[in-house]
Image 1 (cartoon, rainbow, N blue to C red):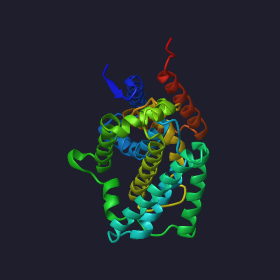
Image 2: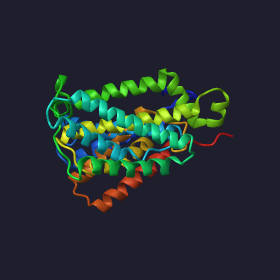
Image 3: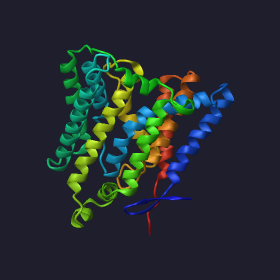
Image 4: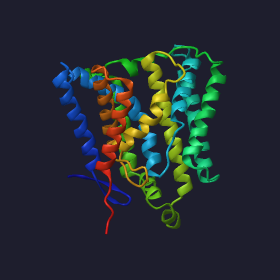
Length: 318
């Protein structure tokens, strides 16, 4: 099977293939019980929905590969949505300004996360979880507890409109973003440094890699990706509301892990995260159609994550 080139050598597609195979199996199982589940229209709907968690998963893939995690994505997403709807108030006016403000806030958030982790030596889980609380408070202060405005038309069209070949614009956008992320991982110095930092941070530092700078940039990428997902979600729902990012906090970690990214760092691929997003979204759709209770749904999520982690487990070398 074809392999992915990483800083540490060749990384097999095993985890990626397993995630895509599992998603296809779920579609086939669903088609046995639900008419049209494996239809083209439903596949497009699944892919569109998966795009939201898939875009948040960009940051989690980067942070997990470096051996970290970002639990501030929930309210970074939420704050981004609140800012764009509050600044534009449902019109195209000031949309450019809104993008600049959201981008600046996201970049600053990632910068603070990265500095806290690298220079203050705060564990990533604690640093980002604390930042999530700070962002929640900032969102409440900004909106006075009542979100204002609505999604600008461009975001609404991007999140809900249909593009060439009858494929939603959101899928085209996600595909373009995926191509850029894969290019970064495979063809840039930053991508190679990201893998090296997660595999052996001390050795990477001794070899001249600016490990602290890489970690800071990774958390900035994560924050910007979460904010981007927030803009798209605002366009999809037409407005912003509190709690819209809550489900993506752990789901974004889950899709990366399901796709073969190691929580120990140094191993992973965004192509696998895409597979994880499709798998988890397909599972959610199937369980909802079958009217499975929330408790059973949570249990099955856990089982799927554990099984995929076992499939992606690396055997120790002798």
